[in-house]
Picture 1 (tube, rainbow, N blue to C red):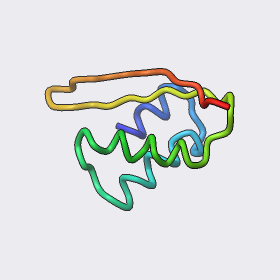
Picture 2 (cartoon, rainbow, N blue to C red):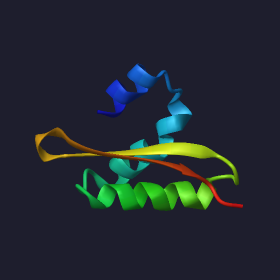
Picture 3 (cartoon, one colour):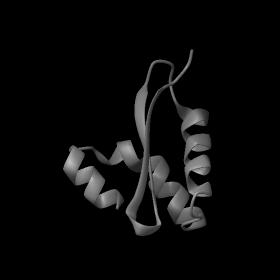
Picture 4 (cartoon, helix red, strand yellow):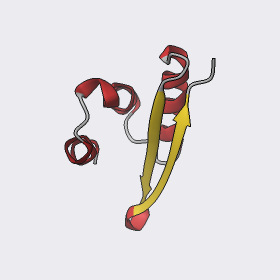
Length: 71
């Protein structure tokens, strides 16, 4: 899924670094994976940075959100 999203949206490798690290270190933890990725982003994000979060579940259920790092 990450490769397809990266290719479709034309993202560089840094854009998905937090997601890839969480998956590499912990594996797919289903819904909880999103919280681990958010934790990683909050610990290294810079104020004003914007992002999009996507989660995919059974039957290709998709949840999406946009966010901006607070000052």
